[in-house]
Image (cartoon, rainbow, N blue to C red; front, side):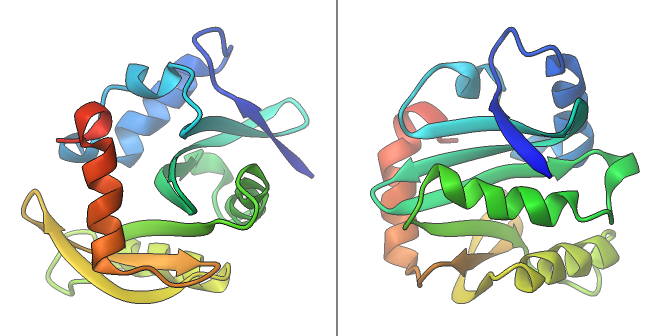
Length: 170
């Protein structure tokens, strides 16, 4: 059984988290991790563990009843062992009753990471997320929003980012 622990500047695995963050997300999608290490009621930065084994991390932002999974990654050597599915389920306990959203790159057969995009979408769909019908373009890439626990509109997504723009925006 896995558990979540809040990530702080004193987290022993912080260097491993930074390394996974840099390898799992393109540079144009990354924000300075220090933004998320500051205590804020709206931000959950957690690592997940099985016993003492560090498995990965997640960064979530919450506005009203929407919790957005900004970053979610499992250590490469631990993928396909259900750690991600367990962590995704456990994340819901941080914000019970909320709608959870994750935005993923639109599956494009011509993209260099086509297989990875398909696998990512299937992961979320297998774990209770569904297509919201909301898509958008950001930094010359097309994204779609998957949702669990309800529905979400493009206007709600716009309002979410308008709220966080001063701190976490572009």
